Image 1 (cartoon, rainbow, N blue to C red):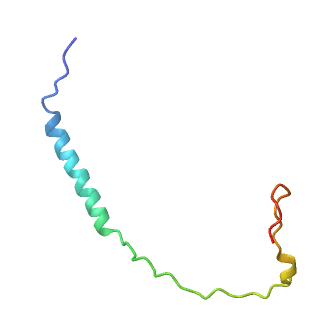
Image 2 (cartoon, rainbow, N blue to C red):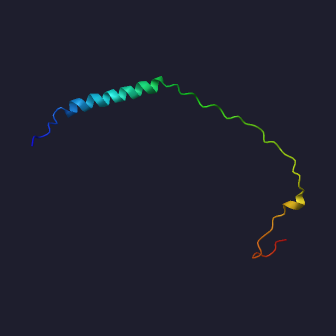
Length: 68
């Protein structure tokens, strides 16, 4: 069975990697990356609540003693 000749592999792989590197660099240079837009700060709108404060009481579980 003949042996695989690997003496030319470095001469093929090195220019291939160089070409891939150059192609990716050119693609990155030609891509138009837009700067991020600054966030717009808006004031939160205060909505009138249809319920009164008497309906917003927080109830504790039955296992805890009542807090006054």
